[in-house]
Length: 635
Ligand code: C2E
Ligand code: MG
Ligand code: MG
Image (cartoon, rainbow, N blue to C red; front, side):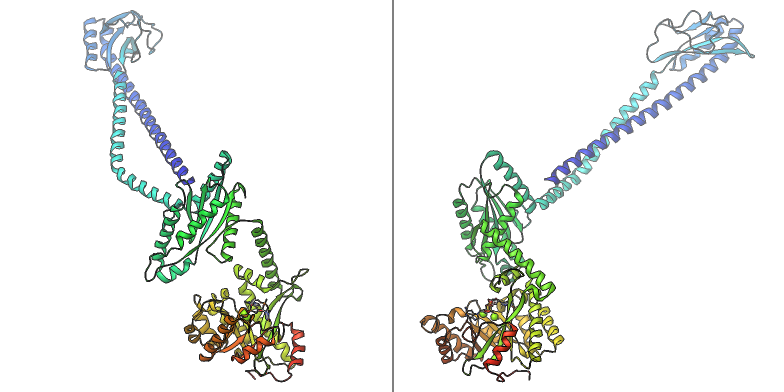
């Protein structure tokens, strides 16, 4: 909008300056022409008067009227002098030629030398009388008065002005002709620039800038007309998959198809825009109550859930939609955008492919997430004991002998003055904010420090399992390099460390490279929460996964729940066939332990053995449990 106004303003300014420049040039040229023409004319008149006067001197001196008359007839050869008269020294008329309008006076004042006499009748605008004194041998013998016309000067000026205007017009016509094509091209470019500034190239929809303008307009409109409207923030779930599998060109095609399908779900006067890579936004006018808005959002999700015809395989995506009502939620565009965004993120974290209205609860959760993030950031930065961040260690035991075979390091956080915050709460916040990268580095460092502290007390840990979040995996080799550096710093060996990653992280982008790098560095790998994600046997074998941890949800109802019993025994058999160690998580009862042991599970972890313990309690546990029975792979 501002661009359009600016372009219009620039055009007007250019027209104005050009007009002023042309006018000034015209006035300057005309003035110059007038001044120089007048000067030239007056010089010529003076010269002619001087010649006539000299020629008439003798005739005046000898009172020869005939000779004087003949002399004066010379004026007929010049268009600038219309009439002439000679006066005697006393001022009386001596001879007169060509005075049809009786302009020349009968006498002139002999004393007013070289001063034009007063005409008998008005000479008009273009003519006037000139007077020169006639001298003979240095003595004044009379006066010559001429009736001079300036008409030729003005005629010339007029012709000059007309000529100038004509030349200007011709130049204008020619330049218009010559520049017409250029202007056309410029107009197209201008149009394209305008389009680029306000519309999205791929879908042809308004872009974020235009959308924000439309939202401001919508807010004004609903205030003026006392109606309501809804703002929808629409994020395409897993769009990256389409780009990765089918390429960016196909990704653009899918975006266009998404835009077309979304358009079909809204009214013609509603607004749909693409405001980011895989983000759309819509304003629905007069939608009625929130139920209707929810229904439209549902329709959007439905139309997008149909597969998109792409090569090599059809693409499936979903939508996460955040919704706010105007003016009920707010009538401030910035707040509406922020709240719809929050609702959209909530829809995403609720499992995607759904629509969610903004609510006070979402606001509260986001505030608390921000608080958690700030507290964690500070705790990691200072790394002081009073920040309440530490690692608890949960023992893992051999299912048959119950000897300790390792520990899993689990983060614990009791913020200063606050209550225990579960990692299930703060790890997702850290993942969302990216803080998990620093947290991951802190965990490895702290685990190494604690292993060293235990060694000082004569305890050699056989294995330490450390959790790696999917977001950390995206760091690629840097993650592995950092782990190696820390281990080197503490003189720790890689074989003692087992990294636990989830199935989904295994399947994620560059997951394969990171796993290979981990293995090449000598670390062992375990698949955490097995059964809750998506992974294939092929992957487990390909990455030479060392261990597989059956998720506690399958252990929980053992041994009575036949379905879980079947799943667990099948997983154990499969892992055995691949030569992978099986760890059962969340073992709380002897019955569960017995079932698992009977079906070939290798390692047990759970409250039955011990809860995760702070370092000091861990030492006691180890001493009480089985002193001297631990075997370390590095010793
Ligand atoms: P996880 O890696 O699957 O860890 C096992 C979780 O089960 C732990 O919860 C543990 O306290 C709990 N648990 C162990 N035995 C039992 C049992 O017998 N019964 C029940 N009901 N629960 C049991 P926690 O410590 O709350 O951790 C939750 C999740 O947070 C972990 O699941 C892991 O995904 C994540 N997490 C914890 N520490 C870290 C960390 O240092 N880094 C990363 N990236 N994630 C971590
Ligand atoms: Mg774990
Ligand atoms: Mg687990």
